[in-house]
Length: 78
Image (tube, rainbow, N blue to C red; front, side):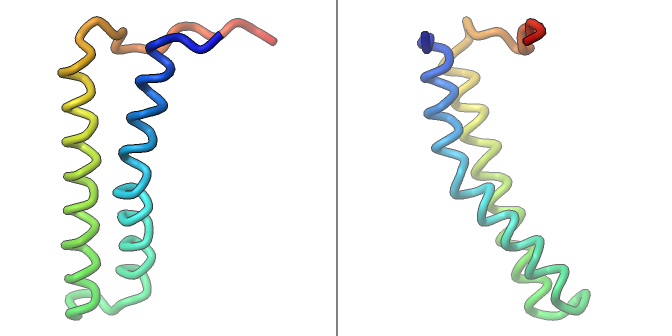
C-alpha cells in the first residue's frame, strides 16, 4: 500500500518537523515582543535559521530523489 515514494516523503516530513516547530515558536515569540527589541530580533534570527534548515533538508531530498514527480498526482474522488 505504501510506496517507496511515500516512505521517502514520510522520512522528509520527520526531518523537517523540528525546524518547522522551531519556526512556529519563533513566530509566536516575535509576535509577542516589541519590534526591534532584543527578544524580537532573536526570535526572527532563530526563525530564519530554522527555515534555512528546513529548506536545506528539502533541497537534499529533492537532489537525492530526482526520479520523484515535482507535482502531486490528481486525487480521485472518494
